[in-house]
Structures are given as structure tokens and as C-alpha cells.
Image 1 (cartoon, rainbow, N blue to C red):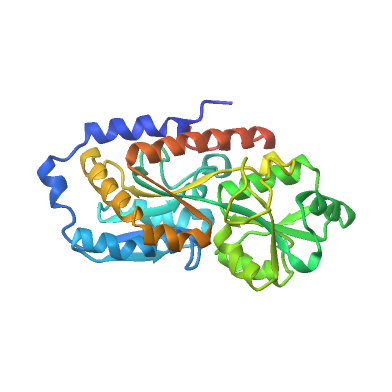
Image 2 (image 1 turned 90 degrees about the horizontal axis):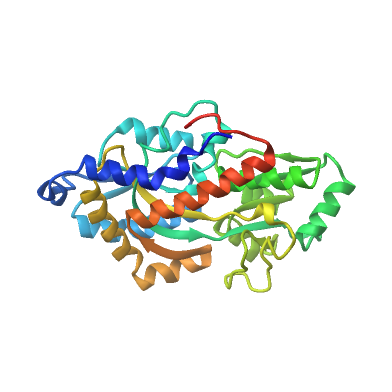
Length: 327
């Protein structure tokens, strides 16, 4: 396998930021007009909820309106394509790393360069990913789901949020040789409804997607993706503790600028993001959605991307996949 270019993202974007920097005065002059956040998920997703909590605070700080534009679908490519095509430093991408970190393995050709077109600005949260099932199935663990799937080959449906969660779901299905259909969603929020109604039998997504249906009693969370459990879902084991490490992934929600956005400006905006995200009210309102506050600047976000790109490479190896694009 050729080296994963995405793993070097942090170093690449930092070099670009230094080489293409504005003057301090130019950086301070931003913004001159309204700012748009393009999101790869629909309203109600964890990413959307956090964006709207920051929207008012950043608008006040910047003295200009901040507009949220939801562009779900296309495995995140619709939103990223709109962001890249805009080539405007007032059009920013607000996204979970899950939306794009596996793209080089999944697509023969990408409408963007992962190493150059996503300039990290600020880290906001780490998303708690849950594995959930319809309560009506009676399934209470991943092991029980595997047993049920083997007892009914070809009859169960599963879905993962676009990007890294779906990638991990593929590894889970292959590792355990399950005959389970993967269902794609333009808007993963709809998958939560389908799970509650029994049209879907397993969903790996942000806890925010499952939570309303857990509250209604229709959905049960049976695991938290990763190596550790979460206080947000007491008595629910991690995928590692459950014996299914292939489902363990981490994702980070952050803000990105277009190619060539200078480091001076990104650091200034990153500091504003950190200040807004550090408001205790934001943390309090995000906690029920399964998001852990991890505010940081461009370097913090780049570091998270490097780690998650490495995890994507590990999953790709399990699946026998090589990078198709972004080499």
C-alpha cells in the first residue's frame, strides 16, 4: 500500500499556512460580509446542533451574520464540493472528520484534494458514536446482533453514518462474515427514524441521531464506538469491551477554511472558535447529543485528523482496500 497522504495533512496545511499568509492587518480585517458554514449533514445531526450553538456567538464576535447551509448526501461530497468550488474565505466547511477521512479509499476520483483543500481552523467536539438497534428486536448486545444476523442471512439491514462510521461497519460485516445489507442514506438523520420503525436493524452513527428514539423507547444503544464507554449512556459498553474492536472509530467536528487560507487568519478564527465552544452553556446543551467538548486551534484539529486518517488506513487493510485517490 502506498503511503497515506492524508496522514501528512497536519504538516502540509501548516506549511501552506506559513507560505501563503496574509499580513496581520489583512487577517484582522476579516470578515467583510456574512460568513457561511457549509455542513455535510442535515438539521438535527450532532454536527448541525453544535454549529447552531456556535452560530450566534461567532456572529456576535465577528460582527457579521453566520449562515448555516445544510448540504447532506453524496457521502459528504456534495457539501465539500460546494465549499471547495466557492473558493471564498467567507465560505467555511463545518464538518465531522467522519465525513471525509475515508474518502481516498472509497472514491476513484475526488472533487477536492484532501491534503490541500481543507485548511484546519478550529476543533470543536469529539462525537460519541453509538451502535443502536430497534428495541422491538430484543437484541441487547453486539454479540446478540451477530447471532441474529447469522440466524437470518440476507434479512437484516444496517447503516453507518457516511464516512468513517460506515467504513467501520463494512469491516464489522466482513470480519464476522455476516449477510447483512448496508443501506445508504442521503441524510443519516432519517436512519434514526427507520431504526425506530424497524426498517433498519443496526445503526452506527452519532448518539444525537439515536437519542430522540431512545427517549421514545423505540431504540436501544448497545455499544459506544471506541475503546471507552461514555457517561452519556450509562451501563453501555464500548465496542472494544464488547469484543468488536473493528467498530471502534473516533471522529472530530471542526471548522475548515479554503485552500491557501493563511495560518495567521486561521489561528485568529481558531481562537474565536475555542472561546465560543468554551462557553459552559454550549457544553451543557451539547452533552445530551453525545458530543464531548474538545476545543482547539488549527494544530489541534490537524493532529486529530492525522490520528483518524491512520485509523482509516487500518480499516482499509482489514477490507483489503487501497487508496483510490489522494495519493
